[in-house]
Structures are given as structure tokens and as C-alpha cells.
Image (tube, rainbow, N blue to C red; front, side):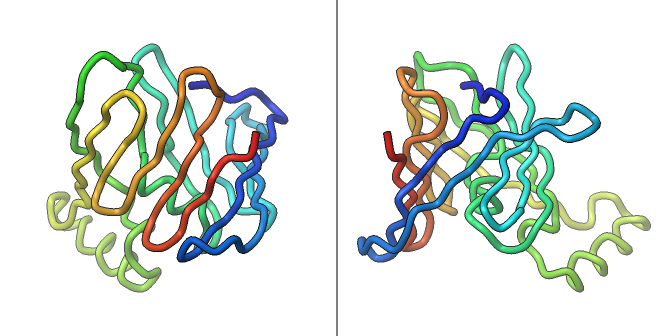
Length: 158
């Protein structure tokens, strides 16, 4: 999976299987040559890939579909031949309020293991699943084809 600068990914947003609106993510790069996805509200989801995996590593913004994407698929391994289970650690600010995050981060200065947001994921080569929901991709199509959480689905428009 790879994204190219200025790629635009358009999705149809469905809530409870009812179409709501169109949503777009654009691939951007900042002054430090860091790539990110940006939505129409200005939220930013930073990503990177190496020889083994694609992963999201930082999020800037408010509650959004991009924030959910980070929770759903913090990394995507470059394997497709078998089912893979893995555990990933999410940044505290993704799953807690600002106040909760501040308190936990302060306590973590005293004990680094005080609070970890480890989540289990499974990947079958096409779909990553977790307790949060799922994200699907296809080798023939660049990007993600389905982002699904709670009663929300983003279906890729081709």
C-alpha cells in the first residue's frame, strides 16, 4: 500500500446503512517531508512505511474519521499469504480525553508501565479487524476500500 503526494481518496459516508455525504482524504507533505492524510476539516493523520509495513504514527485534530482510522489500523503489514495476529500500542490521546491523558502522562513519568493502550488486531491480507471495527484494502486498488466502525462505514468511490 502506498500513497502519492496529492492523491485524493473519496468515500461515501454511511451511518446505519443510510448515505450521509461524501468524505475526502488528501495526501499532503509538511515542511519536514512528513506525509499525512488530511480531511476537509483540516485533521491530519501522519503515516510512514518501511520494507515490512505501513503505519500511522501521529494524529493532529479533533474527533474525525481519520482519528478512527488510526485506531482501526495503526499499522498494515506487507503480507498477504496467511492470517496474522498482532498487538499494537495506541497513543493515549487517541482513546482518552485531554484531561485523562494529562493525568496519565504525568503518572507515567513516575512509572512508565502505568498505562498502556495495547490492542489486538488480526489481518488476513485484505482486512484488519479489531474491537474497534475493520479496514479493508485490495492489492489492485491504491488505498483503503472500506473503513468501518460502530454504525459508520466509509466506502471508497472509484
